[in-house]
Length: 426
Image (cartoon, rainbow, N blue to C red; front, side, top):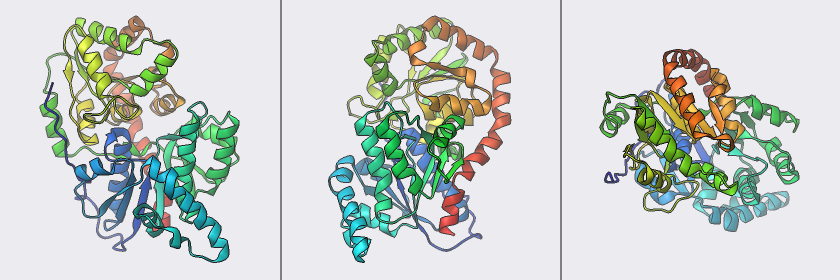
């Protein structure tokens, strides 16, 4: 196994314009961290970079569930990592928020109840950006719904404007999800629908604050250091390179329905390597020395690697989202069960095949005329997947051109999702 090396990265601050605004603003983010899930890290880093294009002196408070690790991977004096774990949120922050909202009717300033660093950060913010990738979805369980309500509702209780960054929402078929969404979402300054399916779901709530915007991770740029590191981890190959990104989340869903996700991944990799392809196993959500979880695909990746007939290349170090994107760009084809690995494949015009569980994949693929490249994990058949992979490799040039033609429009759509943020801080 490759010796794990934790990459320390800083948000790129070299290309911002200093001519637009020199007014210092404070922005708080919730729902995303710099570590663990690199999809969330992609959105977070891209959001900060893009806001700094016009507000180079903006300061950010990142409210994170992984404060210790995030402080290790960030080196930027204008980014403050602030702890807000689920226990802190439910046990202290939200109750204080309820008191703040109630006491405001008695003319007691809400700031009086900001007794933690996280709450003070929210009170000081000109705007709060919710960067959760998916929320208020029926079928994800009571705990997940509760977390959605507490996280998005907390800054509202302290009277702060909240912009919900581009994400998947709905369906709102269960009474609890529908009730919660109706209570929280109308109070936001903006709700950004990531695709047509989400937009259609939100129509049923009769909201007046919904806009469309592509995923913010499309704005992420891999740095020269990211490219260099990718070249070390995945050197140039003579063979066709197929990246494989497994997901513990999809594995969990599969196990609940008596599926065989791990076995299928092993058989798929064996078949691809028998056809002469070089497979690169790439966890896109990783926590070193931690057990498997929805935020940690490393144990799953290691299990798959141990069971295949011939060892593939494996990236088992904690890399920046930019490095992961640069690795995906080196692939001829990506097979992924992680949403933001798919985003990186589309952002680099790399043909992709998705094995997923939600409408969130297909609605983004449709923006690139690639919605035929998604398979529900319940319909996974190894032989058909391998045949589809061979077809995608044959169509690589055409697929890449099609993706590349749609990319400018999608990137501009992603940037438009931050328009309300820029209005609120101007």
